[in-house]
Length: 154
Ligand SMILES: [Fe+2]
Ligand SMILES: [Fe+2]
Image 1 (cartoon, protein in one colour):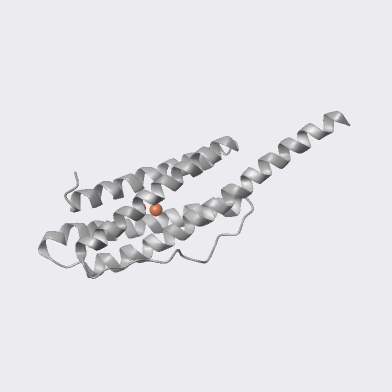
Image 2 (cartoon, rainbow, N blue to C red):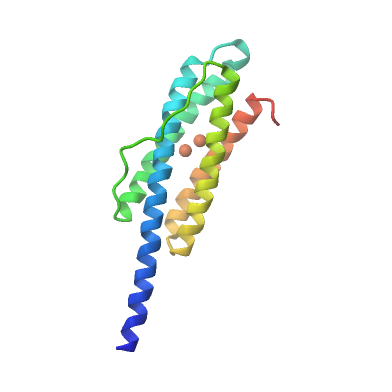
């Protein structure tokens, strides 16, 4: 009997971590949906010669974020969860510089959250998940760099 309680506890622990990861991934997914919306809108409305280049980059970001959303949704399903249908509320601005700042803040928040998710995945022994998240975070960091360059912050 005593031997049985340990594995049960261990399993209970790992399944509660798993639920926490699923919850977190659904928040990540909602943020990816928001990023898609913002990049679709911003890439098509950003005007001005000085922003010509970044508008094209934002269009590329939009398709990267869609790819992230698909990957995160598949991982949620794989872990036994249900991918959310709700996007985090998108933000907007008429001012090009503010638009870019909104995107930059969103990327930074996304990176912070994926870092947390990677450490949770490793704690739970979900190494395939942490590898997938690492590939995503590398692209989010590229997005962050593009935005910083456009804002003259580097
Ligand atoms: Fe993303
Ligand atoms: Fe991004």
